[in-house]
Image 1 (cartoon, helix red, strand yellow):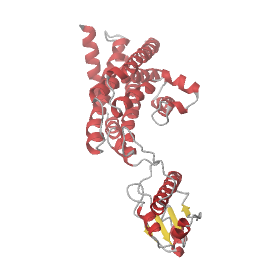
Image 2 (cartoon, one colour):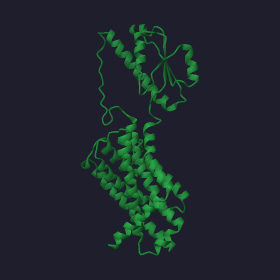
Image 3 (tube, rainbow, N blue to C red):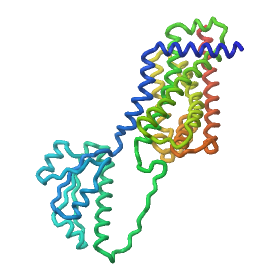
Image 4 (cartoon, rainbow, N blue to C red):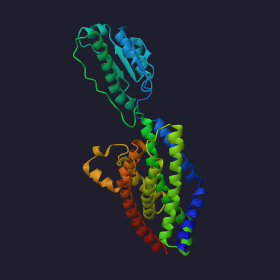
Length: 374
């Protein structure tokens, strides 16, 4: 009974210590509120309200049809300008795209010729320029093809490709961005909180007080894991319900409870990793550098930003030992595709195995550190 009591009381001590640290409290609040909202609504690689202008030298129904194709939310309403205004508008940065429709464009299209449109792109807006150019080209091509089809009844029958975007019908980037930000922040904050808790005790000298108490390194470590894990789990729950589903109105297809259960298993691994890193570092600056070295590969190569299939084979195999790989897979399956336990149980088992391995490795290192201080 004293074993469980020690773990409980030591965990409560960690929670009180965190409550007296305003910087950490602000970090937690920001990470699971403002950070998620900003990441979801201001994704730099998304074409959103791109400014566009059109120089219509043809004045035909076809040119009007092309102009009306550009609408919100990907493009701002097109601004109709004259040819002399085009260069000035591009120089001033007023437009990302300017389309110049030449005279007799419709007549040449119906005559079977291949008239050319000019698309001017402000390449200093790199993300919009790269993504938007293909959008503009495809939209103009579709509008011209449909227009010509009405005039040529004997034209070769078209084969239409009917697209069905599953799990995100409108291809809303904010849906993916918000949920992936929650997943990434769970990893980041769990490592930072547990590592900072151990280093803070070492810097304040309270670790020596624990050494003279009838508690074991195992109890100290488990107390830090459950207390800091509980804080992150509670913050992630609030973020998922209030920020993601409430403020951003992102639909969650699967069971929130199942996702939180997987989050708890992931936290078991990442909090153990945080303690291991804290035993290697001698100060908070050193711990911060270690966190960057661990967090960046874990988040960038886990499949959250780039599909794992696009990575080199050796990277795919190495990242199987990282808990984030399986947590991202689990999160996508549950939150986006509505998967149940029958689908994600392999990820659950792998997270348990990785968490246990990290825990015992961290415990061995923690005991060694304690013995050196005794």
